Length: 187
Image (cartoon, one colour):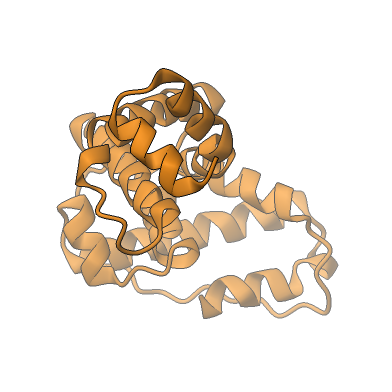
């Protein structure tokens, strides 16, 4: 079945098509939910909520632009809305724009290890870090998404970088941090 037919059937409320849509896109959307969640259970709840919203708003999709991109935006907004409701994103009044840098010769830390460190960050720092570094949003866009100021976004990003640097330095010998820390500073 083509994607257009699958979308059309989902708009009609066809459960088998909704299941097929879920199977096709749940992995991609789950990784987004996991990126913004404290744990797998929370990510699964967010994925469920995202698909419920996608099914409810399916009529609003007008086949303009990427369908997957449309679902990703709904997923990010669903997760962020959850955090706003739960007040995970408290405003930080201080403005920290300190650059964190360490010069080392090589990088041996794995991607999964780094993603684990990112998931360990406090919610407000992890969310800002993900939106800025991984999703490419500006501080202005982040402040609008989270209902905070641009200064808070900058401060939360700086704190996230500091905490990541500390986690990496605490668990990895100084000779293998290198490019990872420099990469965090250039993002």
